[in-house]
Image (cartoon, rainbow over the protein chains, first blue to last red):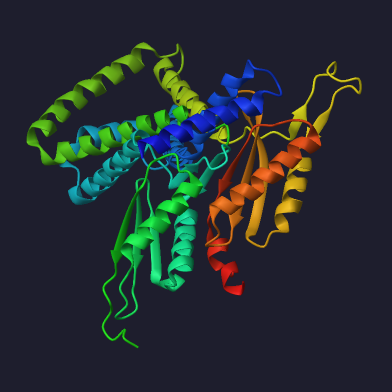
Length: 222
Length: 204
């Protein structure tokens, strides 16, 4: 596994230099940093949707507070609550009713805050793998790899395609075969087929293969 | 890929999340914990006194307006403007020209090759291939250098190895055609369309 990683990194560096030889040698390092940046950005979520939702909520809340302040400055009645009334309500907060409604809203707000914090701090890795088959930077959705592996296993074992289910995650290829009644599943053969096909793709991140046999359903003999 | 500043995204998410959590947890604490309720009553009374005092001292002469209120309004407006700028800066970074030479580089003057030229050429070739459902070509500026992004959605069960080989060949041809070896990368996607489309292998 470690050898595969090291070969793939060396291929990717050699390509990035070869692509830039036509321009000039000084750009070779900038091209490989550019590729590293691309891979990093394509395999991780930008968190744009979460950020936009959070910002819109914050803007709406601030705009509301601003509006109330402006209304009170011009001695107009507040939309919901003038700043002075809001102050009174806030200082009497522990005795405000209905307590359960206030607590529920506060809990929801805290929960939303936790979700935002988690989204801000977790890496947000997307379900993709980097392939270095020809040295070009290639990023492939895990589902594409899974479907191709399932097709490959089906083609070479004679097991029907819809009886092979493959899941690909960041570290594991999970193959589940639903066998025909009485036909043994060639586990070792499937493992070899998967390894051979993965060797063609040249995944940058090493991946383990797990082959399982699904339980035969009742009455599936027909 | 685009030019979204992800550090800003995450920083804003973290800050807004912390504010939400602090307010929510604070209110729950005040209701659920008597000591917090006592502290809250004392703190809010003194805070109100301070606000009233500050408002009185910063009153603009001859009016009921205070500098304190105006200042807090200005602060709120500033934060809103900054947040909206952050929203407006999401995305972007795509460029319309694939190659742009300086005027002195060639006797013919400045040469600009449009992104749509590369896009049309690549997509015309890819559309002939039965295993490829859709393709998209865009050029992004990465550290001020153009980078071509070819994004392909194949039929389900197509080996990514085949697609990579095909695309590699096409990109080499494009480089020969334009005389410019633009750094490029390929992304292979799945989606609703590839799930619903007929599986090519069944016909063969």
